[in-house]
Length: 327
Image (cartoon, rainbow, N blue to C red; front, side):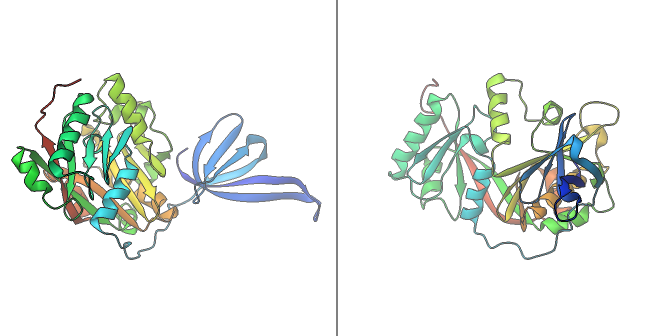
């Protein structure tokens, strides 16, 4: 389960042309297997359901052999918009070209304004609207400020209002490099799934225990064009040793939520998770990998440096002092 496999099935009990049974081979990730059928997700994301009584044979096959190709051309604005699709907020509302986003407080990315382009109002009025919108939801007013991308003068207005800033780096790499980094390691221990189950969530540090926020987390985590979750099972218990998430959107794949339990660190499990997810991303056609990491997260930056990630650009989360009572 959760591995890349090749499965042979009976396509037709009798082929009229030969008078014998005909067979079909399917290659993809085995995502389900019960008493009735198997489900294999192919590289085109299609699901093949194979009745158990038509199963002939199956075997695990190596990770997809990702080829080294140039990264897709992209500018900071386009990559920020791709990232927003890969982490879609529960609630979204336009303000001109800006997007107001809220998800019960689950992560700044899903609870901040993507301030790209023109808000359709003078900046002071737009920021008043932002603060009011978040106050109605009892949330702090965060803005995602990208230069280039955000309107001229926005930073000056934020400074006047006393905003505080938190820098975040956007880093890019080749999926092939990530697959190669995991070769010969623990990548064959990684299992892939289309859903973040209770075991995956038990390791995810951003799970809060608040019911509303956890519901929002599930919706955000499962949002995006093609989402995969990785786990490294613990042979001695139900909670995985390591987890990760990847969402594939055309030529780009976003990596995140890479977590390793403290007692399992320094065993190459984070690299293995990244490698398995990168191989699947490459199989679906991704030619570039990206991630967003807080500029002060030295441990994560060291890992990503070693995997060949380089900085594409930096954006800032700016938090406005709240001028309205919380609803």
